[in-house]
Every structure is written in structure tokens, then in C-alpha cells.
Amino acid sequence: MTAPRLEIDLGKIEHNARTLVRRLARSGISVTGVTKATLGEPKIASALLRAGVSGLGDSHIENLERMRLASVPSTMTLIRTPMLSQADRVIKHADVSFNTELEIIAELSSAAQKAKTIHGVVLMVELGDLREGIMLADMLETVEATRCLPNIVFKGIGANLGCLNGISPDTTNMAALSRLADSIDAKFGPITDIVSGGNSANLNWALSGVDTGRINNLRLGESILFGCEALHRQPIEGLYTDSVTLIAEVIEFKAKPSLPWGEVAQNAFGETLDTADRGPISQAILAIGRQDTDPSGLAPPPGIEIIGASSDHLILDTGRVHVSVGDEIKFQINYSALLRTMTSPLCQPGFEPTDEEQ
Ligand SMILES: *Cc1c(COP(=O)(O)O)cnc(C)c1O
Image (cartoon, rainbow, N blue to C red; front, side, top):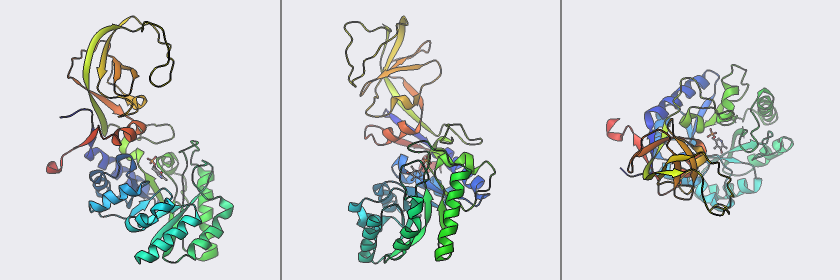
């Protein structure tokens, strides 16, 4: 087998997704499975669908296309506002898109008319995290303008918290989203089908037993893959936290001093390090680096410590753990490291169980 590689356990991912789908169903909340961290990998999409997600969402139209081409049978939602330049592709491969700009929705309308199809629009509302979203005061008129556009159907509203500024979903901001759904329906009739409250950062709120109001959907990626919520990265009871592991190979193993010698200047990344002397160490080098992963998002096995990384080398202090050249070392990996590893052509994912076993 080649290294570096990701090992992805589809059974664990399916279990995590099914558990979250069931728990949220008690509050009338459906789950959109978010596939962006794994680039719309069809095997993962299929595992999510087996677990009962109501649809799939991705921030890149390219990933939705990949799943469509693989005949993944699902509603496809583009969960980032479309690029003006990609309107035709969005109409072709997404059933629904999340939007915040009328100019872009108008372009989607033109593209949908050309393609003789209907496209669903969810309008995103700004609730304080200051990433995407229409200001609350502008929502009713934006709904009205959206509804006037041919071949566009207003599907509902959504919000996204916990991403840029780490603002927590709570009873106050979620109640504001519910009230907005009520006021849209009061003005236009019962048109707000989808009220999508947020992402994995919403789980503490959604599973706490509070009244979840009109929120009837969450979009979950990280919590399904890693079994943790996204505000404090605490494990969620009953979920696997080790569905995804990264494996890299040892290419050098030597006893070395821990203190570099010679005159210290910047390293390859513009950092000036002040390395502490901790005496001689057992140092291993693995053939993986910052180009293939985010070294700060890797957790090494017990007794081993990551002491540095360059573009293509990961340096470990292996302590008392015996290591030889050619050995494989397995790491737990976080969301940030997964994003970078998945997008590295030098590090391919492998899946367990294999198709034949299923
Ligand atoms: C990435 C993303 C999600 C999924 O977030 P997780 O924290 O991985 O659950 C949901 N909604 C939007 C708009 C996103 O960009």
C-alpha cells in the first residue's frame, strides 16, 4: 500500500450519521449530509444516504457534479452562494442553492429559464457570525424579489454560525430565525419549507432538549466524520471519533540532539524558532509535510510527539517507542488536516469496508 494515505471507515461514518439523524428526528430536524471535506466522494455520500440523511450538500459545485456523475441518488444543495460565473453549472447540477445576492439569483433565474428547469433558493440570514447572510431587516423584501423571478422557487431560510467568529447557536439567535420564518409566512402565506439552523456547531443547542422552534434542518459534515460537536470539539456520546486516520511512512530514524546548531535565521516558512534544548532524542522523519496535510491537526500515537514540519517532512520525537525505517505511523486527524489531505493529489483516501465486503 502507498503512503501517505487516509483510511476512512465507512461503517463508522454511517453509524455516526444514523445516530445523529435519529436523535435530531425527535425534534423534527432533518439532516443534510455535507460532503465538502471529502470532495463529494461518492462512497461517503452513499454511506450518508444509507444512514437516512434527507439530502446532500456541498460548497463546491464541482463536488456536486462528481456525485451526480456517479449517479448518487439525492437532492443536491449548493451550500455556498453560487459564483455568478457558474450559474449554468449550478442550475444543471444543484436542485437548490443557498443565496445572499439578488444579482446572483437573477442570473440563476436566467440560466434556469434557458435550461427549462426550476431551481430552489434558500436565503441565508446574517445572525451575528458575520460570514454569509442577508441582514434581517432586508429579508422580507429579498423574499419578495426572489419570488418574482421566473423559474426560481423560494424554498426557505438558513443561517450559519460558529464558522468565522465562532458565534454559538443559542436560544436567542435560533428563536430569531424561527420568528423570521413566521413573519415571512405571515406576509406571503405558508411558503417557508426549509428552516436550516446551521452546522455541527448547532448540535449542543439542538440536542439539549430545548424547544427547537421552526428549525427543521441542520447541515452536518464534521460531526458525522469526527463524532464531535464544533464549538468545543467535545466527543458526542455514542459516536466514533476515529473514522478517519492518516498513515505516513518513516524515512529516517536517528538519535539526534534536540538543539540545532549554527546561526539561527528564518526557516522555510518565515518563522524564527527558539528551540528548547531537551537533550538527545530519538528523531523520526515521515514522508509527509505541510503540502499534504495540516501538521497542527494531527494527533500522534501515545508516547510520540510532533516537533516540526516542513513542506514534505514531518519530524517526530519518538520517545521510548521503537521505530524503524519503513514503519507506518497512524495519526488521528482533525477537520483542518482532513481538508488539506483530501485536496492533496499526493495522498489518496482508502475505504473500509471495501465494496466487496458490503
Ligand atoms: C461547511 C458547511 C456546513 C457543514 O459544517 P460542519 O461544521 O462540517 O458540520 C454547513 N453549512 C455551510 C454553509 C457550510 O459551509
